Image (tube, rainbow, N blue to C red; front, side, top):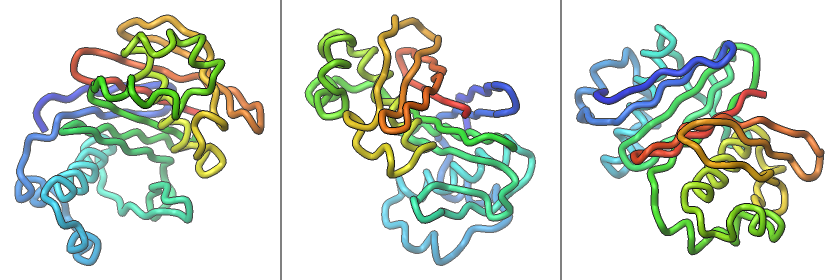
Length: 205
């Protein structure tokens, strides 16, 4: 891991890093890699992400733990010692862990493509309140925010435009914005960091 950033919010810990090491270099940093899981990964990109996530969690927590997935494909530690969330985009990886509260994190490398698809994940009210697709940075934050919430809520938030609502907010290099799960009316506060390299949004319930 070369470029990295650590963040602490309440009892949650976050590690963001740029994945620069080879598959072999990452492999050697782990005590155990499940051979069945690893053999199913075809591309080198997926192998590096798989190993990079586990190296990141080990470095952040100081201990290596086995990752499993529940029925909704949410990652969890086999010993349930932490709630965890994982994200990757291009060669960036973000991991988050909290011992007591569900967490969600999403990292996105900027792309103008999002301006072509924003109507798929923003409802009509959001479109009006969030610059009608004109502010790329705001769209990236809204998308990343909904991704982070989906990782907390699960399949009850699978339709981003219908199930999740982002309230109006001003864009800065870092800050907060609020969202609501439409069916339960539960509100969430999302934290973000945005720079030229990536957009990062995370949430602790």
